[in-house]
Image 1 (spheres, rainbow, N blue to C red):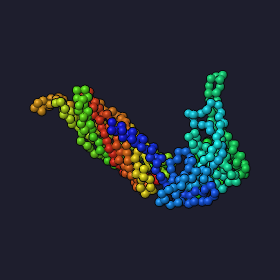
Image 2 (cartoon, rainbow, N blue to C red):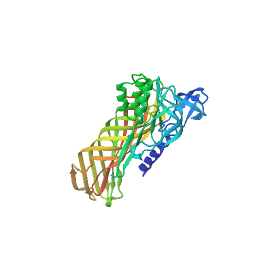
Image 3 (cartoon, rainbow, N blue to C red):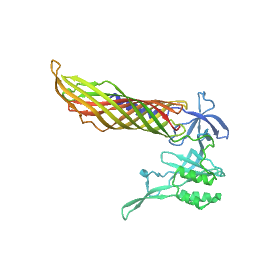
Image 4 (cartoon, rainbow, N blue to C red):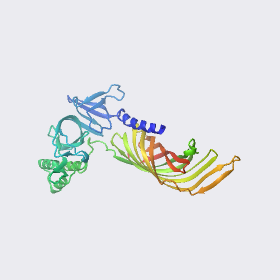
Length: 427
C-alpha cells in the first residue's frame, strides 16, 4: 500500500512541478513600441508555443514582468531560442493519423500568438507554431511583414459505392516552396527534386531553406553558440542491495519475514532524450543494466523451517521519465518514475522445507535445483539523483518487489535498491 501511494504521489508530483519551476536564462524582449529590453527570460518546457513570457532585468528581481503578444513583438533566449509575434489565420485540420477528418477540412482560425523562429536566413526565415492540434510551418521572406503558412492537409476520402475510406494527402507546401525558389531565382533540378521529395518536417524544410539562403549547412537560429544535442549517452557502474521476503499463504497466512540484505555490483548503459534540448529539464531515459546477486532467507513458523538460497543473474531494461527539480548547468537534482522488465537466470538454488520437532530436530527433505522461478519479471521503479557539471550522474533507484516463486504455503519475493554512478558522453 505504501509503495502504491508513493507511485501515485510521484505521478502527480512530476507533472505539477514541471509547470511551477522558474528557469531564467539570459535573453531579451522587444516590446510593442520597438524598445529592446535586455535581461533574463523564464525559459520553460513549452509543449505548445507560449502565449506569454516572464522577464527580469536582473536575476535577483522579485517581481518579473509578464509580456504577451499584445505587449511584445519578439523575445529571445540568447543562443538557444527565439520567438516573434504573429497575428493571422492558421489551419485547424488535424494531420495526426488517429484524428483525421472525413473529407477535406479547410477550417482556419485567427491566431494572435508567439511563433518560434526555427531558422533565420539572408533571404527567407523558417518558423513554426505548435498547439494541441499540430505543428505548422511558416516561411517569411525578409521583405514581407507577415509569415505564410506552408499548407499540408491529410484526410479520409470516402467511396460510398465500395464502402472504403482511403487517406488522401494534399501537399500544397511543395508548390509554395517551388514558387519561392523561382521568386528568389535559385531554381535547379536538384532543388526541385529535393522539394518534391520533402516531407512536412522540420529537417526537410531546414535543408531546403539552406539552399534558398545560399547556406552550406544549418545555422543556429540566433546565429550564436552551439545547439545542444537532443540525446546523450551514458555508461556507468554501481551497487545493488537485494533481499528476499517470504509471506505465508493458506495455513501460514500470518507469516511475513524479510531476509538479510546482500550486496553485489552492477553495470549500466543507456540514452537520455530531452523534451527540450535547451532547457534539459524533463527527459526520457532508456537504461539497460546487468547485475549478479545472491540472496538468502530463513523462516521458522508453526514448527516449519523454510530456507531458500539463490544466485540470480539479471539483464534489466528500464524506461523512465525524469525531471530536474533544481536545474543549473553545474548542478541538477532530479526525481523520476518508470518501469522495469527483467530477464533472469538462476543457479546455485538451495531450497529447504522441513518440520521441526519439539526437540528442534528437522524432519523433511532437502530439495536442490528448485526450478519454479520466472525468467521474466516486471515492475515499477522510483528514482532520485544528482547531475554534476553535465558529466556525472549519481542516482538511487528503488525497484518494486517481484514474485520469484511459491510452493503453495509460501510466496518468495525479491526487492532491490540500486546506487549507480554514470558518465555522460554528450551534453
